[in-house]
Length: 140
Image 1 (cartoon, one colour):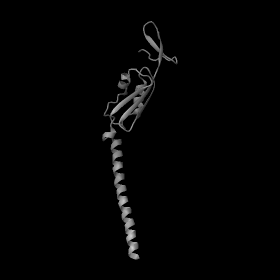
Image 2 (spheres, one colour):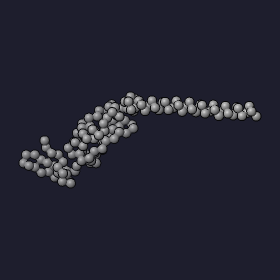
Image 3 (spheres, helix red, strand yellow):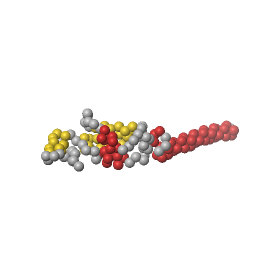
């Protein structure tokens, strides 16, 4: 009976140690991957694409893409999203902007554009006016 009890105790402890070693190896692996992503190394740490969506169809989004200032391949976690959002919101015609990074290396930008319904002029320059009465773009 004593031998059987000893063998059962060893069996339990062997499985415990095997699971413990597997858990330690897995934890080290994932900690290394997370460090590499945050530090800017590896495929997941780079911005692959910048996608821009607007609430209106048929609008030219090239000025918004130029205002982002984020080229594909830039480090994901070193990109200041608040600065990108401020640059996008400063584009004439943009009412509101939101920027977020997704896990697949995509920088997603959503913009709400002003709906121009009228124009007025001071005799020299034209001023588009939005539905809520705001001047969409002030000339320099």
